[in-house]
Structures are given as C-alpha cells and as structure tokens.
Length: 323
Image (cartoon, rainbow, N blue to C red):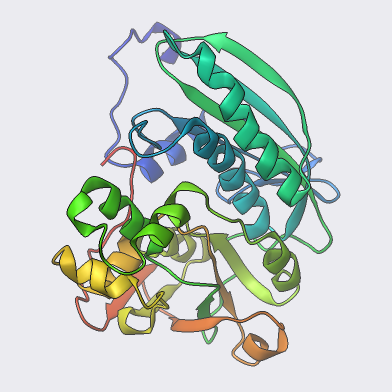
C-alpha cells in the first residue's frame, strides 16, 4: 500500500508526463464544479474560472549569475499568466509562496518588486501568499482568471486543422546560450535574446482573442517538440510540423549556427518561448485577427509528431524535468 512505502522506495517514472499521468490516478480531480482537470495548462472551474500554478526554483528554472532577483519575480508571475493565456483567460489575482534559503532574506524585496511590476503590467493583483524558510530559494505562484469563452484546452485538435503559432521561437533559448557563453555576446541580437529569456511576456490579449476560433491551444514552455507532443496525445491526432516554417527573429539563426545547431531545431527544442501554439481551421488563421504563422497540419494516425525540414528527427524533444 502507498502509505507503507518509505522514502526512496516508490516507483521512478521515465519522464515528467508519465509521472503526472500516474500521480493523477492517486488524487481526485472530478466534481460537478470542475470542468477540466489535470492535463491542460490550467484547470477550469464552473462556470468560467481558470486556475494554474507554477514554481521557479533556484538552479532549475533560473541561475543567480544569469538573472537578477527582480527578473525572477517577474518571470514567476509571467509564466503563470502564460498558462491563463493558453486557456483564453484574463487574470483575477495571484497567490505567492516564497521559500527563502540561508542568506536569501535580502532578496525578498527585489523579487517582489519584479512580481509587482509584472502584476501591474498585466492587471493581476497579488492578493496573498506565504513566506517560509527552506533549503533553497523558490517562488511558487498560483493565478486564477476568468475566461470570456469556453477555454480551448489541448484536446480538440482535428484532422484537417492547421497548426499555427504566435510570435517567434528560439529567442529565449538563444539568450540562455549567450548567458552561458560570453563569447556570443557580440553577436547581433544577443542583448535582446537575453531580455526575452529573463522577462517573458505572456500573450494574454492574443489568447482571449483566439479562444473562439481554435480547436486546441497551449503555451510553449518546454519547446514545441515536447509541448506539441502533449497536444497530439491529448487530442489523439498526428501532427506534421515543418521545422523550416518555424518563425524566428532574424538574430536567432546566427546564434543557433554559432552553437552548431540547425536554427529550426533550436526553435523547436529550446523552450521558454511563452508563445501560443494552436490547432484551428485554415480559414480562421486570417479570420481570427491575430498575426499567426502556420507551421504544420493535423492528420490522422498514431498520436505524435512527424517533423520535416532541415534537421528533422521525430525523436526531437524539448525540456523534461525528469529526463
């Protein structure tokens, strides 16, 4: 029985998605008030509330030599707002849990300054939370929002849909690469790429505008090579994605090539883009009124992704916390 299992004696799962799928069997996520539970960017509570949570953990989500406390605070809220954007929701408010390690007390003020700046920018008041001592620094934020239209989720992609995305991909990953290798800092766009990595901007306005048109939508946090695989499994469809069609800022390909990478591969696997990727009818790409780039199609077949273009490999993956 699980209650008799000691520390380190439980089952180890091969990847993050397998672990989450198993953990979901151990808890109850169903009630008349829950419209969508585990498996999407956020839960949906009747009639129109959307609820999400995400942490930022020192050494995993950020490095102190790469980001300031202000940056960490901004990003901690922004990534949660991106989950709301994927559900077509706008924020109501946020709760913050701040864990301070030894010597971290002086960092609380600038972390909250960054949180506050992001909160004011996107209209998401911080309404409460908790502060505790721990072995290391982490900031966990939970945001609740309201959707004007039924939240799309990841489960509605249909054969015949196109796959489209807002904005550009790969810039955050390029910025992280520049931070890791100072020799790249003289390349055009290096400073802007670093800023994109440190302070993402969630697509809240776009998400709300897109929600009535899309059949499925999610934000790009772990790279489309991983995130679209999740959408494919949730919808039970096969996605065909052209790496050569992935939108990138003009300065991203030179940084990718300096790293010895095919630009499209960096764009597909780098992650932390916080753009919105979706499946929708081809006619709605223009009709929705939001600038989008079509990067592929939805087809029938075993759930998964088939890549084409330079560097194509169906085994491409983005970030996985357990890999």
